[in-house]
Image (cartoon, rainbow over all chains, first blue to last red; front, side, top):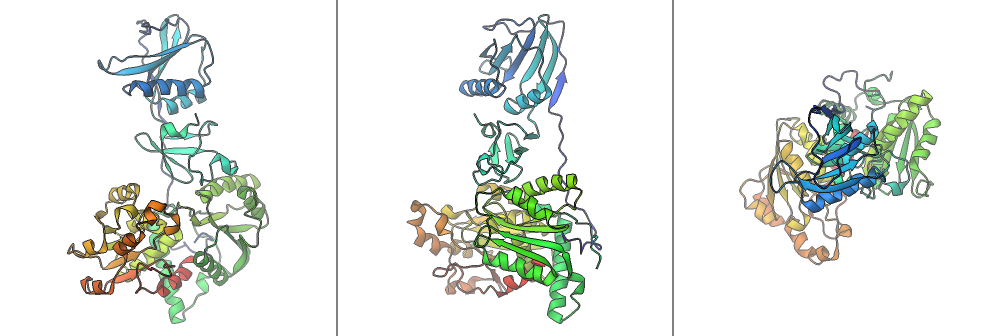
Length: 195
Length: 320
C-alpha cells in the first residue's frame, strides 16, 4: 500500500490528523474604570504586570509550587513579589498572585508558556494603576517546542538522553492529561516540565 | 504496473494511522492476494517489481517472526532490499538513528523503512524529521512501518490478528466476541486490540487474567470508550463457569522475564489461572478457535493445544 502500487480502487475516508484549536489565550474585558484589587499584602502596581488566579482552588502547597514553577520557567528574576491569597470564589478557596512592576511587556511565546504552566490564570497589563489589558489563559491543546519540557519515558525517542534532536511535543488528551506525540505516554501537565 | 496510488509516503507508526476504511481495504487486498496465491492465480498485480524501490529492514533488536515476514514479503514484491540487524550493522553503536536514516534516504529515490527498535515513537519522529528533509531536498517522502517499538505498538501484527479474526468470521464485520487471556499486563498484542477491534461494529471482549497480570486500566478505558462491552475474570475456571464463553480465544505468553521477584514467587498460581486444560474443552462453544501470536513458552505454554501455522502464513501475505 505505501509503495503506491495499490489504492486505485480505494473508496472511503483517509486517516486524518485531528484538528487542533489554538484558542487558549483570550483577551477579556479589563474594566478600566476600576482599580485593581491587588492590595492585600502585595504592593499595588502602577506600571507592570500582575499574574493572577494561579492554581485557584488547589491546596495551598500546590499553589506555592505552581508559583515557584512559573517563576523558575519564565525566569522571573526581577524586582517583584508574590503570595497566596483568598479567592473571591469562596471562603476556603485560595489563589496565587505574582506582581511584576518592572515588566511592561510579555511576548506571545511567554504567554503560551504561562498558559501551559498555570492554566486558568489571568495576565493583567497595568498602566497608570489600572488594568489596561487582561488575558485569560486556559489549558492549551498542545505544549511543544519549549526547552524546559521533556517526555519522562526513558525509552521514548524524544527523551533528552537519546540525543536524537527531537522537538518535544505533547497533545492534550483530556482534563490535565497530555500524551507525548511520539511514544504516546500519558503525563499530567505538571510532570511535563523539567523543574 | 504504475505506482501512483493514494497512499504515497504514508507512515504506519500506530494502528490508527490507517482509518477504518483503509484498514478494511488492507484486509480486502490481503484476502485477494491470499486467494490468488492459494489457487495459483495471477500475482503480478501485487508485485512492485521495481529495483528503484528500496526497502530497508532495520532490526535493532532480534525478532525472528517479524523480520522474516517482512524479508519474505519484500522478496516477493520484487524490490531492492537491504537488511540491517544487530549482528551486521553499526546501528547499535552510539549513533543517531535520525542521521543514519537521512544517509540511507540519500542513497535511493523511493524508499520505505521498516523498523524494529526499543526506541518508542521512533517512526512518528522519523516521519516528521524525514518529511521535512524530503521537502527541503525535493525528494519523495519516505514511508516508515513500525515493526514493534518497545512497549508502545506493533501495528502490523495487530492488522494480522484482525485479518485472522475476520477470516474466521467469514468476513462478517458486524460482531465479534473475543476472549483475551494470558499476560494482559505486559502483552503489547492484547493492548493494541483496544484500537484494532474497532473494525468490528459490535465488540464483546472478555479479559481473563489474575490481578497481577490484568489489563492496565488505560486500555480497559480505551476499549469502553470505543464502545466495546468488556467483562473481566480472574481465571479460566471462573470464566468458563460464567455461562457465556467466547468462540474466539486469543492467548499470550506470560512474560516472566519482565516481572519482579514478588510476582515471580507466585508464578505457578499465575500460570494455573490462565493455562487451558484438556478437561476444559467440553465447556467451549461449538467451533471455538484458539489463537496465539507465537512463540509460546517452551516449557509452560498457556495453550498447549494451538498450532501457529495459520498465523505465520497469513503474516507473509499481509506484510506483502
